[in-house]
Length: 205
Image (cartoon, rainbow, N blue to C red):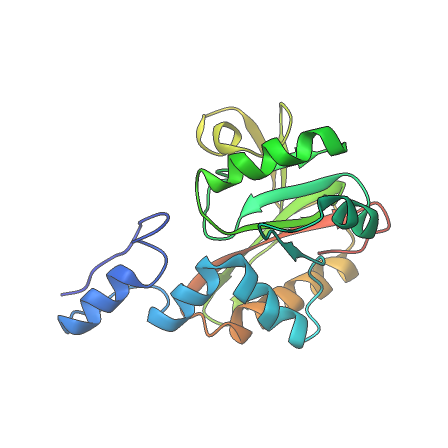
């Protein structure tokens, strides 16, 4: 009667299975083809958010002739290097000095040919679930070792989740409202999850 989609990554989240199901005229859960394709791509999603004043960090796409020293000078350190079309933190590297950058880019390219660089936001990691037109209470994510990587996400006991997150009611309301708008701007439907970083100045990204 209806397909319940619980797939991760390319083929499952990027509009491919959604397109197949629409061609077969089978109803399915979650967002449609266009929203799924858009939000699987971090760059395209960022463009939509930037045009609508959703706070998202600046970004540089890696090109074959890119002068990476200029990137560092522009953004400062540390940096976040990641593939544009992946999930589960595959290919994500924190870069603290110039010597690490090329290896980080090579690692990201193992997962996708397109690579992006952003400032590494130091602070609290938050996530907000969206159900329909309602933003759920904010969760703070506290990995026990290092960054919130694949192991921290999928190995039981590796991460502590605080719900509701220990932030003020006013900030919580603002974050949830912005997350709901971010969800709606991309054309998502039914449910999604919006991830954020809350920096030391209490600015969320």
